Amino acid sequence: MSMPVRPDTDATVVDIRGLWTVFQSADGEQVVHRDLQLHIDRGEVLSLVGGSGTGKTVLLRQILGLEKPTRGHVEVLGQEPGELSASGAANVGMLFQHGALFSAFSVLENIAFPLRELKLLPDELIRHAALVKLQMVGLGPQHANKSPADLSGGMIKRVALARALIMDPPLLLLDEPTAGLDPEASDSFCDLLRGLHRELGLTVVMVTHDLDTLFDLSTRIAVLADQKVIVTGAAREVIAYPHPFIHEYFLGGRGQRALEALHDKPAGQSPAQQAPAAGR
Ligand SMILES: Nc1ncnc2c1ncn2[C@@H]1O[C@H](COP(=O)(O)OP(=O)(O)OP(=O)(O)O)[C@@H](O)[C@H]1O
Ligand SMILES: [Mg+2]
Image (cartoon, rainbow, N blue to C red; front, side, top):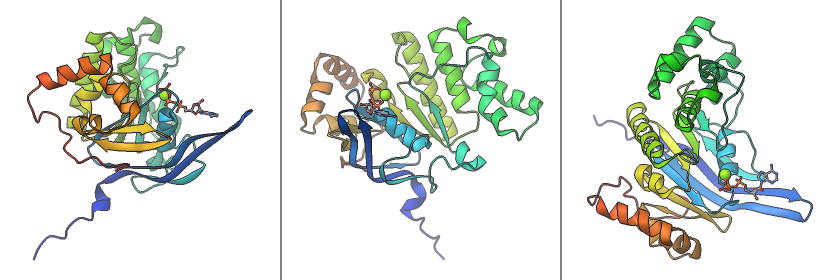
């Protein structure tokens, strides 16, 4: 007897169809997303690139359930995002773009915060879980009682990441994870993210302006322009897509340097192998 074939939908982590986001402003309506489609499978590291103000952060917030789209369908692991059940809340962790830590809390209190809010576990267990996460992001227990003001930029990102992972979410959202870090701290944070992605089997959706981070971590790239996802695919495929934004973004001076670094790597190193397709 043959094993049943798992339907494709089992692999789906994020399914976005026909999404519209419209904000009302003093000057009228601002359409940020217009009939946007995006489909993300388990295990992907999907990077979202697009100009400033194209709605990348808003899209992450919609996946997290903090904001509702004006119209359209967003599903995360078969659920509507942000359902107030414990399981819904535990599905997605997010590293915020300006994800400051609570300055009045210690490192450990910051990491433990989402778990403490749930009021389901005794303090000692929560403390233990937070210490495990601190170690998971490469920081020793000697940092547990420090104040955020006493941490370097790279350490702050790590603590924020530990907080995002405290509920063991299968889906992790990263909004500009390496912005503001020096190249060394940025490389080391990328190494950490790569290791966690592999070891925890995470699905990751990442917004980044940093081309090194983009080429380093992504299994697939999605480009946001003209209010929608205009193309998705491996780096080489996306770069070949004819669109003024892509040309400017990847083939300007900054892009050229990052691309040269990419070409220096052996062929086939990029895990992204899928054919380009809008919104897939
Ligand atoms: N709550 C809101 N009310 C009104 N307008 C909003 C709201 N949230 C976002 N916007 C607008 O939506 C657009 C997209 O914002 P968003 O923060 O998602 O951009 P972004 O792609 O993340 O940009 P950046 O790369 O600079 O971070 C912006 O023009 C922003 O002003
Ligand atoms: Mg943003």
